[in-house]
Image (tube, rainbow, N blue to C red):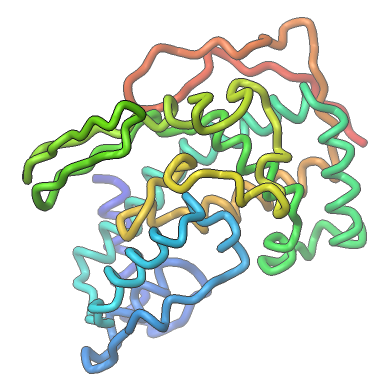
Amino acid sequence: MFFIDLIRRVMSERKQSAKKHNDFMQLLMDVERVEDNNTTGADSVTTDAMFGHHLSEGIDELKVEKQALSGVVEKKLTSAEIVAQCALFLIAGYETSAQTLSFCTYELALNPDIQDLLVAETKEAFNENTADIDYETLGRLPLLDAFVSETLRHYPVGLRTIREAAEDVVLSGGSDGSKVKIEKGVIVEIPLYAIHHSPDNFSDPFAFKPDRFLPENRHNIKPYTYLPFGAGPRNCIGMRFALLEIKLVVAKMIQQFRFYGVPDTDVPVVFTPGYNLLQADRLIVGVEKR
């Protein structure tokens, strides 16, 4: 309730002052005032600097998503919807991004060669000026994108996702030719960690190999086998925000600090038993200023 009350209070103060702010809440409040006669067709689904990370990388998925969005209109959001979206970003986006960044530092410590390559890539892109890292530049760093992508594959913070069948569907494609019927209303659990670590989907799945996600290799990734943010029109609403945040922090950290393994660094990671979130018992690495 604290966050809900805080968001409502800030919204009320902004409406009274009519002052514009450059943040996520302001974007939602601006949408609240958009007229209903503007529509967004399938052709308006555009790309951005993070689009190379797009989920399963499948053409079929992009078609499904465009079709789902083709009938969406830019309606006025209610105050309750704005509050819900802001709360979702605060609650769902904090711990998950922090966990991913912890796993990033762990892999940086275990892979000094990769760390050195990332330092070189970011130095060249930013001319050693880490104060002015912008969104577009972050999206043009292939090794940084591959490193973060492999971290999310190796350590998907969400162990599973859940969907309800909207209609009867028959799934086929098993190696033995088997089919499975899923009836409307059935709840389906999708085991993300298992999918990411299946040798049918990724060679040497328990090895940390960012090269899998370099531009020249991404075509080898099977559709719907890489799902750190889910897939389709109901994928994680905070995907691009989370990727921007993680990449920005990693880029700034490695410019100023070196991470390395110490005697207390667990290899491999010891995980805390859990149902929804992937958490390590501890992640201990050494840090020194460059």
